[in-house]
Length: 124
Length: 124
DNA sequence: TATATATGCAATCATTTGGTTGCGCAAGTT
DNA sequence: AACTTGCGCAACCAAATGATTGCATATATA
Figure 1 (cartoon, rainbow over the protein chains, first blue to last red):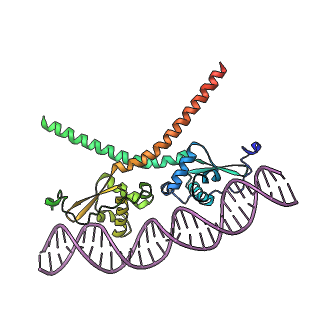
Figure 2: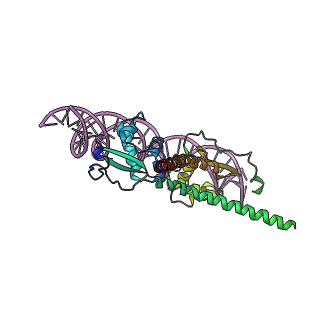
């Protein structure tokens, strides 16, 4: 009931998993990407999530476990329901990885600039 | 020899793989991420790449195959060597995926704005 | 032409992965 | 107190994955 929604101190199975996986492995599976997208706008329970897929609740639960293990997702218990919410900060890690390449391409542009500049000077 | 460097019309084993894989699956493996990073600044041959890893050339070759299959990497043959280069555009797909979330967060901010605005108006 | 090098491919193997079923337990409900 | 519901966990299984070894072929070199 409503009385329990914010009673976050009375949970039981909200396991804290060791960080075994990495984010890249977590998003490799299409079902997990779908889950991430679903909970991006609002936290959802395993049962609610499972309704969006053909596979069983346990399968979804397993995916949630993996997502939780790599901290992409956080659990929030309210009564006997566990809401899973997206950990925005963890998605940032993917963006950080991409940033490396942006930098490499940028420096490549700079090199091109230098070359163009050299050619320009030679013309003089 | 130099004569062959641009002779791209005389290759033999430069197979065109069917697109079976997903970019997300491709970057799931740490070795593949390392390969991507290595060739980001300049194209490399399988042998040159293999020197950077403990595993055998064939293992690296397999990873290259997977990367090629999902178009993350392109082959460029010069003589008997095959240079693998990064396909920048494909990395963009990952960024596009992240963009979804940026939009969701943004709209969340907008909702917040609306709420704040409503509160403001009520105060009046 | 004979030999060395660069590479892809097939077969094989241990490990991981994604999924299913069955179960136990805590939290609600009647 | 008895029943229902939500959820995690263990056992099990088929398929995919990552790596190895051996082999075939094309290119380069002596």
